Length: 120
Image (cartoon, rainbow, N blue to C red; front, side, top):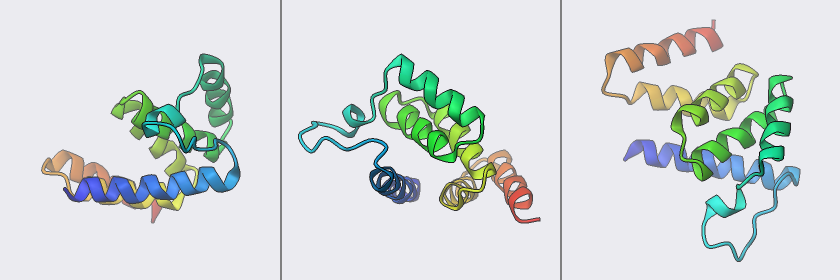
């Protein structure tokens, strides 16, 4: 249950950031968040190219897209970690809390390795 509240907090911050940046306006009449974060193949390609060049906003948009719209947790966490590596403090906080609360010792150790990487 704690993961849900952590993800909810991270998602709220990302939605606010995207809204403030004006990158992707939320359709107030949309029946679900996934409709607001749908991207065309061209948009995914463009965002991916920008993210590959270090654009943290593009990384966060891809993380949201894969997590909400595609329900691809692997891609979601990959882009979230790339954003964290690029200095996004919200992504770092979410990932560190996420891995710290895992049952698997390997996942908790992975979280510790991220912590050491980001806070040498």
